[in-house]
Amino acid sequence: MEKTFLMVKPDGVQRNLIGDIVARFEQKGFKLAGAKLMTVSADLAEQHYAEHKERPFFGELVDFITSGPVFAMVWEGENVIASARTIMGKTNPSEALPGTIRGDYGVNVGKNIIHGSDSSESASREINLFFNEEELNDYSKQNEAWVY
Ligand code: DAT
Ligand code: MG
Image (tube, rainbow, N blue to C red; front, side, top):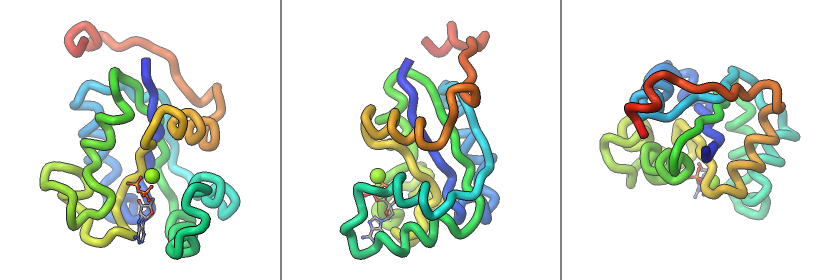
């Protein structure tokens, strides 16, 4: 089954949104494979956001993501990569629709609450960057027969 990497950013943690965000993905029918509260090092932040290295906001991005704990997660399910991006909403919260996480809680593009992988390549890269094999749980849930 497809997996994606999601992360409640430091602003989402400070604004008490971990529970709400986890609930949205649980209620959708996705399965949590791994999760941890952690502080991202500058080195990990630079690797995670390597594709944005040349962007003018790269320094701010690294400073922000390392500024406090994040809640890193791996979620599993059919089409979960694209589906999670839909649940998150557009990158800029001012353009994100109400009902999406960024649309409901964000205002500014720099503080957009949540990260989610944008492709299967970035999902496997990011999962491996943040999690060890033994931190990921392979299990079945009783409700799966009612989701699929
Ligand atoms: P996304 O997080 O939706 O995948 P992205 O990969 O294009 O968006 O950018 C990564 C993060 O960088 C994004 O969540 C917030 C920040 N960012 C993007 N565009 C920005 C901009 N124009 N100014 C400041 N920060 C920006
Ligand atoms: Mg991105």
